[in-house]
Length: 367
Image 1 (cartoon, rainbow, N blue to C red):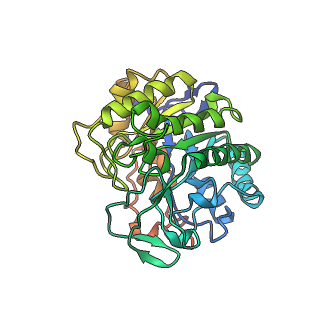
Image 2 (cartoon, rainbow, N blue to C red):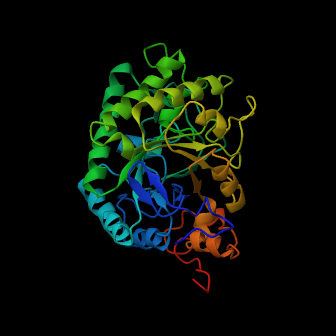
């Protein structure tokens, strides 16, 4: 598809370090909870991703690296052979459509509940509970609990879980990986001084708080080349009760360190549509551009106009769209032709166990 004159940047091709993208519209990872209790990707998920195959790049929904990483009902996993086989159906289908597909590796950490773990507490960087109302669990809606701090000797096993997940992602046929270090999940819990009160080599200074992500990145890079691995950060977000006064120092340091690996991209949730922790002025893509030389992806609350402006200004190379992709499987075509978007999807439909609110959104009649 040639880029329309009204959106010559957003809809133009992009070379992602040797991986050709047909446009700069990225389908953001969206947890949709359709994998069932065994967490195995299924035919309904194949249809869902194929419907959205006109994206330049699709980042799969957050996918748990281990049973310890659980925190969301019916989300998919990548820790056993059945899950690899399930994902392989989706990667094969998207490859036939020429759509690059990255898998997002996920560990929920304290954003979980003991009912996901046989009655044992969830783990985190420190034993600090989420300050929130409740979480959806296998036992129904439950109040958040105090997690258990990972022992220093346990951290290496979690890093190894990431490495094994990276191996399984390669076996499943993905084109690359995204390390989920954002949105208040386990890696973010180590990065943020609000949730990391450790006194070992993983706590205290920003260098120590970065160590967990550093080790995970380096473990994954023993399996994948750096130009096929991205990292997601959310410097401004308060989701899962995040946000510390030193956030700017923390995330500037993290991005600077990640710059040395030659990664596929840095995915920054810079928008404030999901909430802002108000610990200072929000960080901008320009701040990350100053310290990260590789491809930069913006996310959260973008419209086609603001996405075009950001790319045209050199602030971002790619823009990830989340909620617009829920109800608009043909989002790229709607952008290209100036067609109106479908009404936004209801939040209550995000985790239904059927096609309703998932694969039943209409394509534009002229598609």
